Image (cartoon, rainbow, N blue to C red; front, side):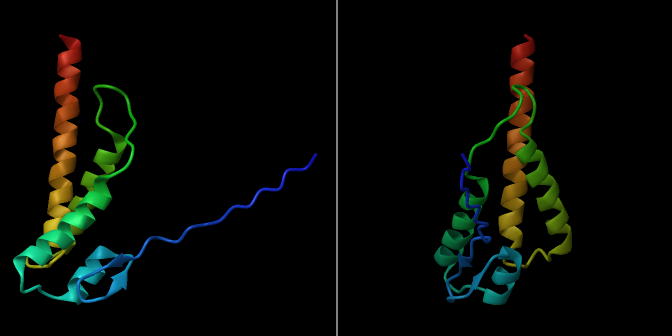
Length: 116
């Protein structure tokens, strides 16, 4: 008996920015959006992007860093090298790098606790 299966490829989600611009690449969109006069709006925008980047299920070996943390750290460092510190996207990628480093350090501490 044949089974009918449909596979639908989903496009990358588009992010919306305060000036109404939509894009799938936060670096490009944040640069195009330009500086935001009100600090609160900028914080909300970066926080929302950060939260969407770190959300989701993580899986790995206890006491070892999550592969996702290692990958995020590596990608964030690579992107940070290409950005100016004054780029609107810099704050986002620096936060992602720091969060990943925290996760990697937490895994190291867990491993030490397991070994005791």
